Image 1: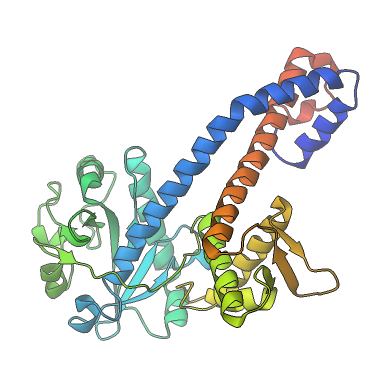
Image 2: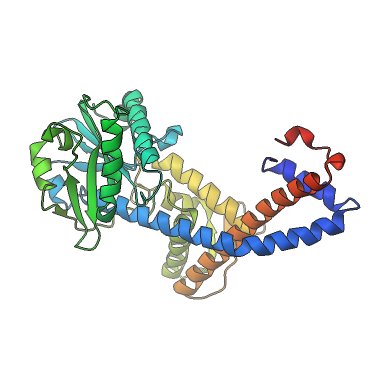
Length: 376
């Protein structure tokens, strides 16, 4: 197989300029036509999964937000989304902390557990080890010490049985040390009954009931048999690993509403203003929001320019404009979403078609290949 990247593009350009260029062009069009529908469906499914995942994260955060019983009655507060993401290691989705007990809870949300259940569990244990190894870093970011920790997988209630069965299998077969005092806990969310968050304790592979409960008996009771109905709070607009279209849509909304409010040109924005929006902890709930927010803005502008959705304002260092039709927010936002999807899919199709046509051509004409060192 040929690796994806500049080498493929260079080799494709060489083929297009060769005697076989006409044949290659015809084949590229055939491949792109076949790929287009597949890639649109793939994009839409991935976006839907990402939104569903963010919804689970929203619920976990709201359950420990400033207006929640978990916070007001028990002192458990949401601290950050995706702790340790800034280090580039596998991490959890949510960090919760009780400053009186010096106790932290790390939650990984899984919106789909139809397949790869074993990997989800092993990933959670890998993230757990990263937390332990980087405890000092987290304490520095937190400005406090962490004396005890718990680790949780949160899933939609109709997916609970599948993840629990896999957890039981791994524990029964010795893949997980059940003598450990910090086994994974399970939360389930019933999205169809008022967004109820519930601690799941019926894990048959564990000989002691407390091994499936929180160390804090009051938290176990609050998230116990009847669960805890979450009152949704608008605490954040996006997360570090939210889908780029989700983040871009929030940024476009901010640009347009701000310009409407200030009665300025509706599609023009400064990089500094967008950075201010993305670096705010109100919009990006992370202790390293300044660093991560800057990265998000760079990606938003860079990708937007590549897709033709954004262009620089001539003669202005910090000003850009959205290349989107419309005079109302909904129109502009819908156009952004549609144009982003089309451009993203087109790029994906081009990349895959280029890779496939180069591989096919040299499989058909192996003696013509000067690219053998990159073939496997």
